[in-house]
Amino acid sequence: MTAEAKLRVEGLSLDFGNSERGLRVLANVNLDLKRGEFCTIVGPSGCGKSTLLNVIAGLMPPTEGNCYLDGKPIRPGMPSIGYMFQSDTLLPWNTALENVRLPLEAVGRKDDGLCLDLLKRVGVGDFADAYPWQLSGGMKKRVQLARLLAQQPEVLLMDEPFGALDAQTKLLIQEELLRLWEKSDLTVLFVTHDLSEAISLSDRVLLFSARPGHIKEEYEVPLARPRNIETIVQDTQYNDLFVRLWRSLKEEIQLS
Ligand SMILES: Nc1ncnc2c1ncn2[C@@H]1O[C@H](COP(=O)(O)OP(=O)(O)OP(=O)(O)O)[C@@H](O)[C@H]1O
Ligand SMILES: [Mg+2]
Image 1 (cartoon, rainbow, N blue to C red):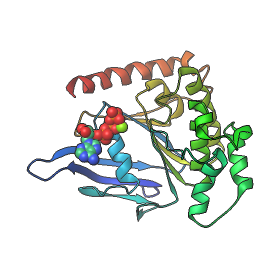
Image 2: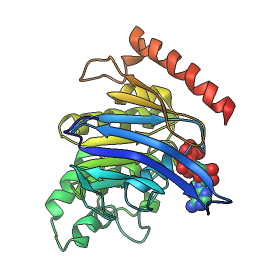
Image 3: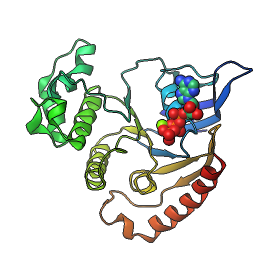
Image 4: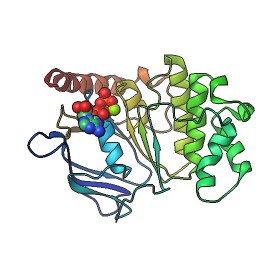
């Protein structure tokens, strides 16, 4: 554990239910993320990845352990922690701009210049007045991303954010997320089932065990930045890491 962790998860365990009929979902998870680091979790379905993000975001208390932001315990609803859920969380009766305004309104601010700029930066600047039902899946994700950035978070928790997108839209939005992240000092904890996505985006990939989830292995991604999503798959180091990750993940899936 390093002293300067932006985000620290310490000895975290979580049981659902009571002690006699409880389900241990997370078992002693320890994790330090440096400021500006992009870290991804992969692991079998049901191993506790979403639960971990929920606990880090302060949505549920852990059974044991603690989570810290800049050395201070995390409280629920801290604006410095942005959470992008897997599901579509845009309000259907609000336009894209109105959705992006929400985090600012929650703290009594109004800054449509910033909101419009964010919509432009994520590639939907021309759709500020459109309602979510008038947008494609990829566009809705972009608006969600703009809304998340409007909160001006320091840490992003992203739970399979692009899981439901078609393969080509996913590649485009990954590229855009990388460019946004490179220009910021955002610390990202990302969850995905897509090993290619995990390697392309991350500095470090954490492989979770079958439930109760804990970090089984940790892989530094040896690929230079800035990265090009298009050509990264030709890199032999990318391919080696993909094979190693998949072999290890497959063992855990077979156990789960
Ligand atoms: N609120 C809850 N009450 C009881 N059990 C729960 C609750 N939320 C999740 N679980 C259980 O905890 C386990 C882990 O769930 P979680 O959603 O964290 O898994 P996951 O790793 O995110 O899976 P996936 O990859 O499919 O999204 C599952 O067995 C699930 O049924
Ligand atoms: Mg999940």
